[in-house]
Length: 197
Ligand code: GTP
Ligand code: MG
Image 1 (cartoon, rainbow, N blue to C red):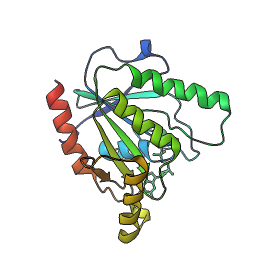
Image 2 (image 1 turned 135 degrees about the horizontal axis):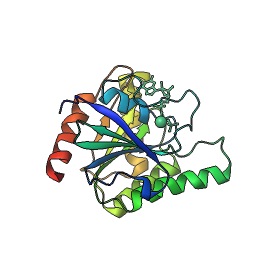
Image 3 (image 1 turned 135 degrees about the vertical axis):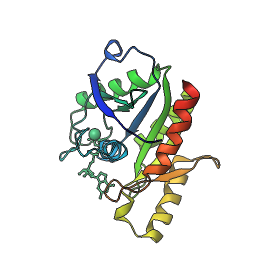
């Protein structure tokens, strides 16, 4: 797939604010600061389509971007950021859950995990949740420019074990800094968008 065009469409907190046109959606979830917004910018070849946070926990809304006038990328709030109040954590959790729990046009969820860290309890919950609801999903390990090859191999094994991934689950690797992993993800999206339209 080649991305020729990407535009911000809308931000939403509740489902009545989501786009109503039934185009396929590809959603990005993961801990705050894992690199969701950077990954989207890298995929669409724009440095600033999505705001990248200097302070984590800035994306609090569900943001929709239309791609090639054909499907949506959906940037979800990051979870697990320690320095926010319990109330805020709950309200973000609700924003994420509202979107994920009932979205027929959601063609795939991309779950991002930082390649440097063992997945957290929140990551495990998210992964199990995605499985439970039966969405198609892909796991992406981000920021791989930060590790040596040998460390990466070791950490991918830890990620696999902690999430308890199935044998058939592949972990994609990505670096927004080095623009690594982009083509592989775009090829995957081709299949999703084709088979849903
Ligand atoms: P929230 O919106 O808070 O949930 O964060 P996010 O997941 O959207 O992360 P974001 O893309 O804003 O990136 C967080 C920080 O990580 C920024 O300082 C980025 O520059 C940095 N970052 C993102 N991707 C990479 C990467 O591939 N390599 C390196 N070295 N840094 C990255
Ligand atoms: Mg973000």
